Image 1: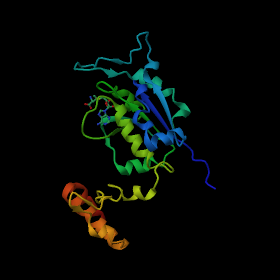
Image 2: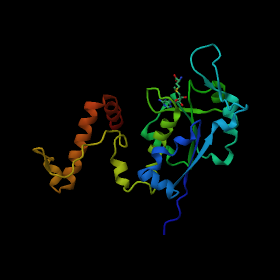
Image 3: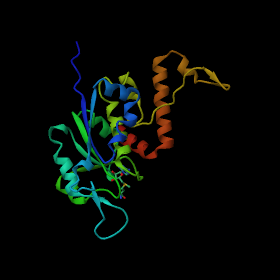
Image 4: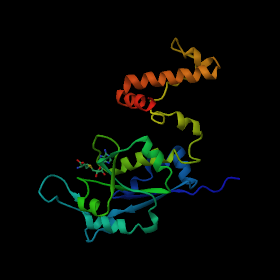
Length: 237
Ligand code: SAM
């Protein structure tokens, strides 16, 4: 008999609480939230403002455009977490370590994660330094806020948690999981607009199908992502 799965505890610090769960409330991840396979706690940073105007930001020292989130307000929100926050604490930031599938796999083995979503120009550097906060980026481009980045990270982690996706095999074959991009997929109709699916896929010959898929994955990776192909070859040798 399987025991009860302990929910993966996610905590989000944001200025826009109503953005959550957003897309994470849909499909398999949304169903898993309803079934308490993961848990979502939202901390509204604005509640930790020190003034009647509920302000959380101020102008940057040294001049320049935009506003910066204050360290004292952020720290009050951070200190309020206590046992709510389990697992690593990350600040979503374009300056951070790029998010990879490897990182998602390792994160999926934690008890949870806490994510700070920035806005405006970002957050006061002293808060990050004093609390030793790791920064994580979802790519080399700039979003208006960390909320969508947090959702990307959570979607990627949650689908790796036990009981959330239907089939474990689909995760093992996916792009990046073995250092390669994935092979092409085909479904019915067997002939579409005069184009038949590759013969090997309807042969019923499991070993030939595996071999063909491996070859296609290697070809696509070589053509589309020379950087990944180079790493894959290095690991193989
Ligand atoms: N001034 C910052 C810079 O140039 O690095 C950009 C700030 S951005 C407009 C506002 C917030 O969006 C950031 O504090 C961060 O939380 C989030 N953000 C933007 N792009 C991101 C990315 N690629 N990965 C993760 N978070 C991002």
